[in-house]
Amino acid sequence: MTGSGEGDRVRTGIQVLDERLKGGFPRPSTLLLFSDKPTEKRLLAENFAVQGASAGETTLYVDFFRAPTLARAELSRFGKYPADHLVMVDAISSQLMVDSSEAYRIKDIDDLRGICDVIVQAIQEQKPSRIVIDSMEFLADHFHKEAVLDQWKRIIDEAERVRGVTCFLFINWTYHERDLSAIRALSDFVVEFQSSMRGGILRNSMRISEMEEGGIRTNWIPYTFKDLVGVTVYFPRIMVTGPFNAGKSTVVRSLCEKSISIDRMGTTVAFDYGSVNITGIEAEIFGTPGQERFEFIFKIFAREVSGVLLVVDASRPEDFERARHMLELIGPRIPYVVLANKTDLAGALGPDAIARKMDLPEGTPVVPTVATENKGVRDALLILAEMIIGVR
Amino acid sequence: MVDDLHPRIVAVLQELRRIPDVMAVALARRDGLLIAHVLPKSMDPKRIAAMAAAIVGTSEMAASEMGLGAFFQSIVDSGHAKMLATGAGEEGILITMVRTDANMGLVLLSVGKAVQAITDLLERAAVAPEADA
View 1 (cartoon, rainbow over the protein chains, first blue to last red):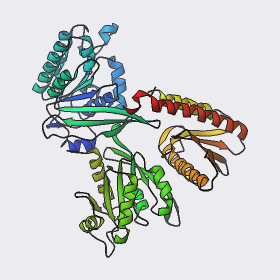
View 2 (tube, each protein chain N blue to C red; view 1 turned 60 degrees about the horizontal axis):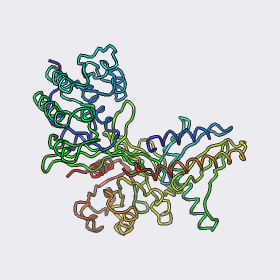
View 3 (tube, each protein chain N blue to C red; view 1 turned 30 degrees about the vertical axis):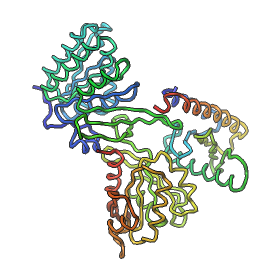
View 4 (cartoon, rainbow over the protein chains, first blue to last red; view 1 turned 135 degrees about the vertical axis):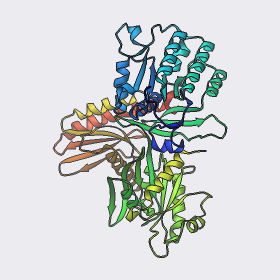
């Protein structure tokens, strides 16, 4: 049989998410990619499909909207994959009366039973580890609700038999809340999508909830798409702040391959900036000046902040008060990690002592760092990323 | 409306870019994030957006400290070129790079027109119902 891939989990390819999911989505499971409006959720499904195919897993892609050649061309934007690992169910070419080289073709688009027979046959023969149905609203719009739900269950049952992870894309146009909760109940995970526009910049984010009691539930995770890279988690602004001479610019330099600093006589007068790309996370890093007289600069950048790295000099407890004040300037409910920098200096306080002296809320991470030697800085960013993404 | 905002903004930037001696154009948000750009490959648009925000923020602050009235524009006049950072509505900063020997009358007029077009686009996007989805 075609290689379905080994293991109990299928990876999303977004590393920080896979870690949260203990290695990926469990096999078998059912995902509902849901939104009330058309959003970018197909990106995640396509990313998911290409990740599978490029990892050598058999992936089944059911496309009601695009001819297979177009679908394959668009999927290749997510990176290279062996074409034979991605099996398409072609619903278009028979409507357009063009030839198709795909193994699975839907002949009559007005026959719900016939459509699902082809999908089920493909699942049984190919035993895919990943199945993408793009998308269920196509069926929901064309056929009677009860019949659609029956076939929906049938696909889930078949996928379970081959231990596949099935991804149903669904925009709700017509169904009522009662039907929606029935659909959610069929799913193991619901991934919701939203797009928002602020000041001319469009942001996409998603939230993953496990339906099981006490399951995983993330915050809204901002993401972005790049050709040939696929979907990555994207934080538009991580602020690096803290008192004068704590080592903020050094932290920015140590995190980012390329960074700029607008400084005079060793102190930042405007800001530091750099971008990072580690383990499936992309982030823009903004370092602020520490001195009070540059606070107006700080305020320019203190908007749409994803998270804060608060840098303090561990050997200077007299500055901790100022550090707390800077945190307040950014505003409430923004995740932050304290970097206890310069821990190599004599007289540096340990993380617990700093947490006590700063009167930090229980559980606030304090990470010992030596920014000049790249020690601990990256760990601090990863802890912050996990806090922003959030897990219950 | 929201979906086609970006191409519309890019169209305005491109039109400004076509004015003689205009070398590069970008639109940043006042908090230093990039909205759109038509810059040459050699420039990093995100850095330029952040710097323009700092320039405009600082200039605005200076204008208000010295009682100069409402801020309109900062011009960075340098060896080979000038950079104009112009406020575009509440949210935007239009960044225009022009050669030193450019016809500044024409440039300023064109920048003013582009600013008006961008202000309208951003305001309409802000009141569109999809805006806070």
